Amino acid sequence: MRFILFFLLLSVPVEAAHREFIIMGCREDSGLFSVFSDVLALVKCYDQGRYEGIEVDFGKSGLYYDTKFGPNWWNYYCEPICLGEKKRIRYTVGYIPYARPSEIEQHTSRGEACRLINKYITFKPSIVEKVDAFQKKHFVNKFVLGIHYRGTDKKEETPRVPYEQVGEAVQHVLQEIGQGNVCIFVATDEAEFVEYMLRTFGSMVVCNTDVVRSRDDQPLHLSSTRDRYQCGKGAIEDCLLLARCTYFIRTSSNMGLWATFLNPKMPVLELKLAPCTTFPSGKVHMAEKSAHRKATN
Image (cartoon, rainbow, N blue to C red; front, side):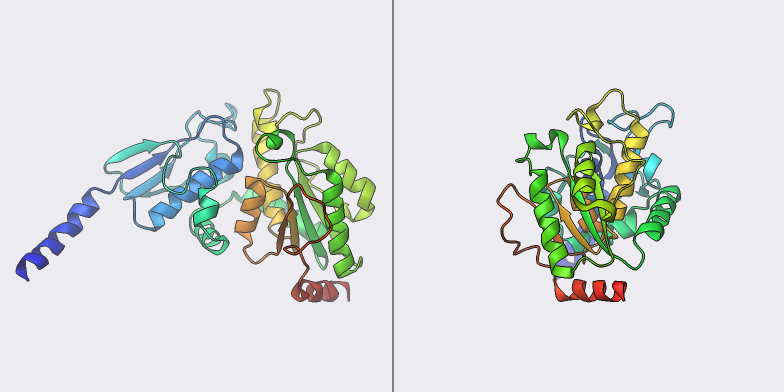
């Protein structure tokens, strides 16, 4: 018994002594919300007690680094993250538990992700204030149908969903709720998709006009002529706005995934390349219908 007690007492400080302080850098060619998922994995590991401390420091690396704003582009959009004691420092560029492609989604529920984001990640007040103003202008007392269409280079990872399939899904939701006081908020990296939605659904459609969008099928985050800071800022604003919608239709993307993390109770339909004849996972539930009726009364 004495040996067991001695071992337990000894093991606690030894375990603590071997926990590392992790400084996370940025994977060079990764998109914004892919890197954000790295940070989410980092804070999850810290929250679980795996690390003595953590810091997010991208230095002069990554697609969103802009010499006009200085090093560490994480701090352009979010408050700094530096927690714990700097002992046994180890540098990494995202290769930690949960950070590899799709692992954060597989091992982290929307509810847990939301808790971690609220606890550790704070967006800059200027971004939140702009999102608040947009919401006040366009969303108040309306059923807000959020649409995120990820185009350009996404077809290299997953089959491209035709615009018309998105339109059919929107029509289905509108039929379920009735076309009363509805706002369709569109977020996308393709200017042509915004134009398609405006042609199809007219004055119901709103979008963030400050967002940089592609017209040549080239991904914005890999373009050498883009405004790096504005590309990142617009994407974050759109993501925060999508999280404030009543119902969400999305194609595959890290940004759309993050919108579901920010609002884990929001009903979501993720579209795949398939005939849009039934919508078993996208059925508008009675709670959303009730919210719509209240908004239109």
